[in-house]
Length: 65
Image 1 (cartoon, rainbow, N blue to C red):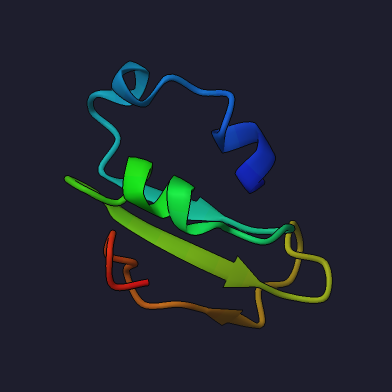
Image 2: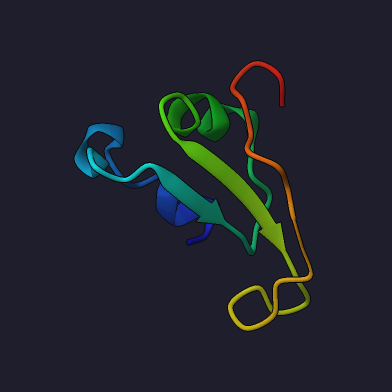
């Protein structure tokens, strides 16, 4: 999903989700701090992220990103 969509989701509402992949927009440190603890958060990038993923980050860590 895009970071702007992720920003609208309550962090406690995805209790069983342990891996998130975001793409399509800049992922800011505030979302990393909110969503990375307790799960793996990846920032993907591609020319058309929905269909082609050219690169992906390692799992992001709050405070280190």
